[in-house]
Amino acid sequence: MSGSARAATHATSRGAILDVIRAAGTISRAGLVRATGFTAATISNVVRGLLRDGLVVETGRAESTGGKPRVLLRLNGDARYAVGVHLDPIRTSYVLTDLTGAVVSRLTRAGRAEPSVTAAEAADRIGVLVAGAGVDRDRVLGAGVVAPPGTALPGTGDLERALGLPVVLGRDAAAAALGEYWSGEAGRASVFATVYMGTGIGAGVLVNGIPYQGAGGAGEIGHVCLDPDGPVCWCGARGCAEAVAGPAAVVAAAREDAVLRGELSGPSVAAQFTSVVRAARAGRTGARVLLERSARHLAVAVRTLANLMDPELIVLTGSSLAVAAPVYLPAIEHELGRALSARGRRPVRVRMSTSASTAPAIGAAAMVLRSRLVPFHPPGLHLPDDISEAVPGS
Image (cartoon, rainbow, N blue to C red; front, side):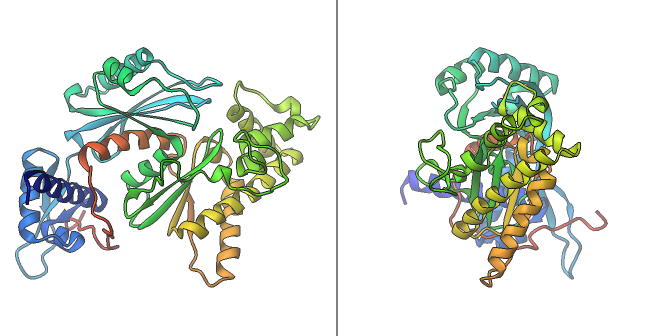
């Protein structure tokens, strides 16, 4: 085997083992053998290196099953950090996460109708974020910057020169899916999807922990056609989910309503969508009708995603779904339950994200963690439900 092949094999096993430890929370070396299929010798060698590098620590012993109690391993959260930046019309979010994906500190700034940031602005705010957390900058692996499709971003080179850090760029919907996975919200689901609604509509899909990108634009359920004779979407097609059910469509319909028109406030579509949600909560029937119609149409687009990808779990995320969850979550659950059960398909679990408004920023940080620490991932690695091993009494 050539030197480059040996290096790739080592990176693959190291990345996979690190990812399994992250997913398990705590696990023994024997548990890693069962979960990965690697030999005990490979596990021993890789774990020795992870301990030496400080990425993993030993954390007590598992309950004995008759032999010597197994030593448990977990990620050392303080070993490395990553910055995530999400540009959005409502707010620009900056987060600093540790190695496990837990948020250590966060910073928000008011958004702009056309989200953007200069390299100098990003450098200044990231400096404040890291310094305020008391984190040694040498432990920061890099920064991820994500935004809605079509957003003008500074070049990677400009950002890296200004920040003095490696930078990765991406789409907010796809980043949200990775953020949910890395922080453990996806559980053990082998096929997992997020549906994201902020200003627009998108989705992210992970298969066996690997983000599914297609040729680069997978997950654009906002452009699933719901009505071929419907309104023209900004993409040029007619009847796209985003044009029929997205926040801009809801706000446009509210502007046509003499009562609701006066309820709209805020500089952006997402802020005005929040105004419609507030009006619905206050008992405005027209606002409730607009949201329910949008939710029914979005549910049909989500059904298309479920039919194509067959996920075990769908997590709803993004700022607009966060504020309107009581309307959208039941509609999507009902549509999936009705359509899938009629064909004998197993049900798809659907739930709201516990960090819907910051999921893309967390995902942006996770993009860095993954690219630097888990650069390779063996295909078909399916984690069993009982992977985690706990310290007795914990």
